[in-house]
Length: 195
Image (cartoon, rainbow, N blue to C red; front, top):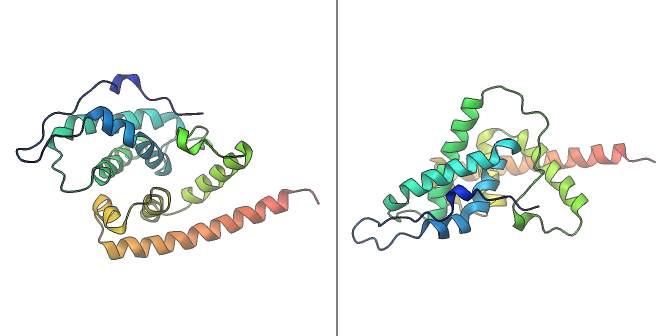
């Protein structure tokens, strides 16, 4: 099932950019190109499913407001990734320790929903959510940005504010934790199967 895109954001345009920087991309184009990226990043940073639409919309409200100021010193995706990082951190801090229940990614953007077997796909998402939830935040962040969003080390460093060597160190640790987590989940699955 595709994630519904909030209607309130449609039809807004980006403004003019700084002198000499050329025209800013239109908000509609930015929204269409980066919506799935923002949604996935928020989901993988621990935002509960019930709040994903609100957090994603909040990101795009900031993008709309600041798009005329975007100078192009970083890639647009990197700039948006930094906004996602701040908005999700603010959301999670405001939310505090309230229980999130056992929420998983029941809905995902259309490009993720095209797997061959929906049951296997849901199970894979459940395992991914479970393993990511057990990672320290700094490792989860670089893992998601590199392995799921395919950003470069430099882009991740720009988003996180860490130097690139730190990004790669965190990524190695996250990959190790991911492999261990998947092995544990597979063992649990085999143990639960009837013999």
